[in-house]
Amino acid sequence: MAKVALKATTTDMLPIQAVGTYQGLKSPFVNGLVVLFNGAINSFVPAVPGATASATIPFPAPIFLCGDMTNGIVVSDGAQNMAYLTGIGNTGASWNTLPSLPLPLEGGTTSEPFAALSGDLANGLVAFDGFNLFSMTLGSAPFEWHMMTQPPAIGTLQYIAGDPTNGVLLVIAPTAGGPSVLYYSQGCSCNWVQVTASTPGLQLVKIKVEQVCGTGSGFVIYGENQLFTLVLKYTPSSATAPATCTAVATKFAPPPFAITNLTGDPVNGCTATCDTSGLIATTTAKFDFWTVINAQPPVQQQ
Image (tube, rainbow, N blue to C red; front, side):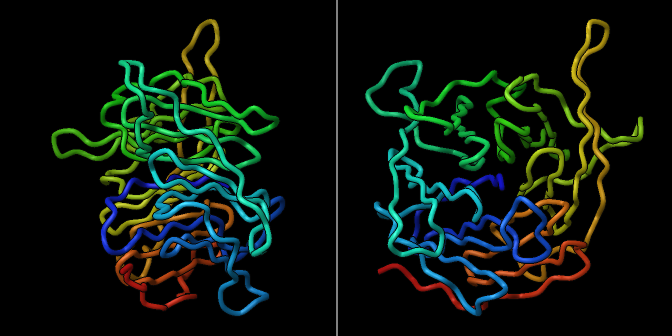
């Protein structure tokens, strides 16, 4: 399941990241949640009470997580280190190294740090270094990053969700105090189009987006303590018309606490986490209520 990972400033407490959903999953996803908590990977499944540990991450201070329990996960420290793991919940499984981003076009000896990371091992990864978008598929080695077509207003890109196979959703920062703007590209076409409301003349969602997650044609956005699902309809360009992307937005109850991370999709429900409280809560597949499944306070890094 594709999930954006938001850039965070490393402080005494590492950010919590989560991928997957806890309830109501449909094929091909496995019913479970993977959480990057205090530099370690733990997973939660309904059949097993509590958290299950995974193999130790091979580098310190990881702050990015994407992937799912079906195909595996990817973690990064936001700089040069990135690795993937396919055996979730198996302490004997091995982590494998992935390449860092390409060197900057303007020159330099080191890659730019990550600003966002999204995707999964089955459908590929999307990364943003603050200047350029890159994608990588993991069908066969060698694994390489490839630059993607840049969308409008790349300098104000804030969040990414999706993957290069099924589609990518971009959140562009609002201007002049207005709401965020969404752009979508289906698959690797990189024909970026602005997402508009399915009803002509209406604005899609009038909020400043703070979290986004989802995959393919369905995404969830959160901002200003409001939660919406977005079901997209993408129409490719033709000889007589440009590509379009419309969305049906449905509003649901927000999480029961302030959140710093959101994962899930409109079909299977969502899970929210909070760095400061250590809380983890999940919805049902119908988004009709939230349940706190973990209330352990975070352990401070020494």
